[in-house]
Image (tube, rainbow, N blue to C red; front, side, top):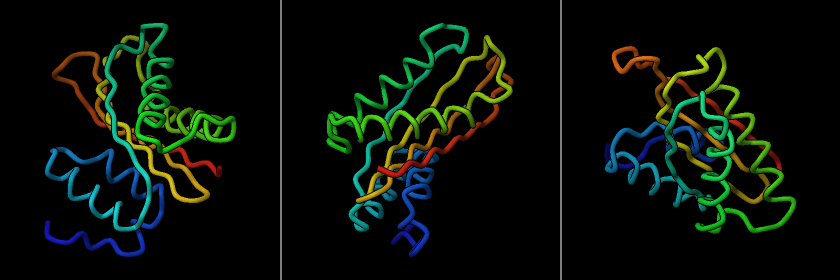
Length: 145
């Protein structure tokens, strides 16, 4: 891909998060991470999978996102940071979980990107009732810190 040619677009935490979440290979992910690093955004990428029928699936996503962000120091353990992250995650989950069957399997890649005043959570992945019926889903949540 050479140098990433998104210029102004990648300065948006939402665009940066969605690009990271949508990468399909480690090589692609590294290229986008490099471009996001140049802009001086903080970021982390994680993955979550499971069945929507499990009561703890929503909690599983929240735990994964909060844990990844705290471990990578994208957020601090303060009420403002945790509050913004939870709200952005909930907003992103709405895009993923809209009209999804209660027994679907999900495989999701989640990226969180932060700059001085904003935080974005992007979720991209596949859902299916049967492995032959996979289709893509995406969600994005952006909150002011």
